[in-house]
Image 1 (cartoon, one colour):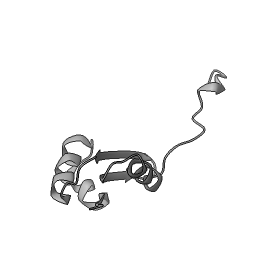
Image 2 (cartoon, rainbow, N blue to C red):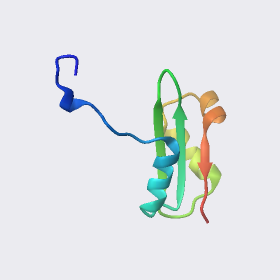
Image 3 (cartoon, helix red, strand yellow):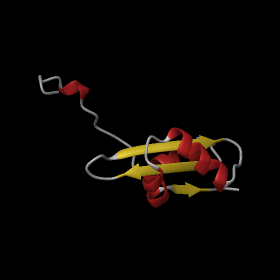
Image 4 (cartoon, rainbow, N blue to C red):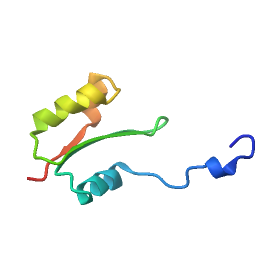
Length: 82
C-alpha cells in the first residue's frame, strides 16, 4: 500500500462478536474466541461442530492461541450452545 497498491487494502474485517456469530451460523456448535485490543487488534477463534466443555475449549485455545496464560485468563471469551 505504501507504494500505491491500494488494491491490497483490507476493506472489511471481523469483530470478536461478528466472528463468533458467523461461525455459529456456519454450523459450529461450540466457539471460543479471543481478542487483544490496541495496539495489536489480534483476533483468534477455535470452533467445533460438536458440543465441547468449557474446559476442553480452554485447553484447545491454550494450545493454539499464541498468547500468554495470563492474558488468556483475563481476556478469553468462551461460549457454549448446547
